[in-house]
Amino acid sequence: MRIAALALLWAATGGLAHAAPSDGCAPALVVDQWQPFVELAGGPPADAALRRLDSLVALERLIAAHSAPDAKAAALRSRLWQGLRDYDLSAFYKALPETDGPWRAATFASHATDNAYVISVADARTTSLADTGDSRTRIAARPAGDADAGDGFTLSGALDANIGPIGWPGVAQAFAKGLLRTAAPATVSAPGDTQQAAHAAFSTLDKADRPLMAQLWYGLPATWQWFAGIGRIESLTDGDTSPPGLHHLHYDAAFSKAGLRAHYPAVADYLDRIGDLMTAQLTVRSAAGQWLRYTVDSGARRITLDAWIDADGHLVPSVNGQPVAAAALGADPRSGRFETRLDTAMHAYGLTVHMNDLVTHWRFSRDANGARFVGRITDVPQTRVSGRAFGIIPAGMLDAIMPADMASFANRFMARLVASDGGQGARVALSVTDRDDGNRLQASGQGDFLDNLFVRFGVRMMNGRVLPDADQLAGLRRLLGDGLAAFAADRDRRAGIGAADATCRVR
Image (cartoon, rainbow, N blue to C red; front, side, top):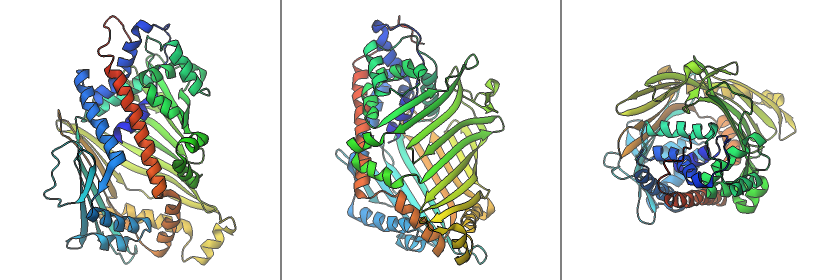
């Protein structure tokens, strides 16, 4: 799934080509378009990196199509899932089989075989992570009752996975090279038939971005053909003139209702059920300015991403909409602090819950062992509720018959989360190692969660919209599998090209 996500993120980007078509150098354009994936899979030489990429794609396809929990793991996972689905934290806690004082826990281990990705209940002390794809997931909980704050539980989760050749700074380099190819024009245009195919597939794309889209299509034609059947790209760049050496990215993409209905009806049903549940905006900021802005609109099935980059593909902060080139992120920063800010509006059953300024404070560090991100949620966001429940009952009337107004319940929930870890706030962490192979991805999180009747009722109502049923989950798996299959077909095409002609200068 990581490969699929990166492929779609990178593929939804591009650079504007101004040179005349040159079919003799067109293969060099394909080689250039695959450079981000070479970096992701451990770096040059390209042939060795792409062989490693083959193994990673095969693993992702196995996970998407043939994840197979054994009987014990399936039964335990079902009990835990029911507790989370119903937000019954007491039942969730009791279902955890391991005990250590007030803590209860469960450990799952996963590994690939020739024909399945096997998931089993494991011993955290003996689980091996020797092979690419091996992973260990540990979930734990303990009661966290408080006379003033109310009943609750501390929930903790940790993932440790062997991700093979994917390490730091390769991930950062792949990201920068991908962004660069989304903004800086290659000197070789895509062939004419490719330009026609890309324009026909995305006819609503901004005219200035069409040559750029054709370059992307030529690099991964099967992947783009697959996506064009279920979605559309509205824009890739801002379109305005950028300062010399800088590029303003503005990606705007959406799923097609008709396309999904035709190709993946179960996924279409799922997105119909979600409907206009959420609009959200996530911004990444630091003292230097705003680094990027990401928005999602579930009703329109649309996502946008806005950012500035420099001539090397490194992010550039902006202040009042203007880029600050001197503060560019650079190739391999060693440390830094930033924050993510989330503003959301949740629409359900006639009510709208507005939550603003949900801020996570992050610290980044880099050393010889890899890179690490640690975040804390330390501030209670602003919450308000409006609308009529089920289109009939005003929010104020609901407040009158409840022991506290609805916004207060949301504020209490967040206040409890912010008070986690002795007042330091809920914690999340992510790290990636720096090795030639056998890299480790480690992710963890811990926080205190309020558990009472009214919170449980609200979460259950929301889960009724968000959680897919069995058929919809199978449809999502099929969609992912088809996307990976298209990417694998593009990889086979890339293998037939070999090295680029040295006389063809693409950049």
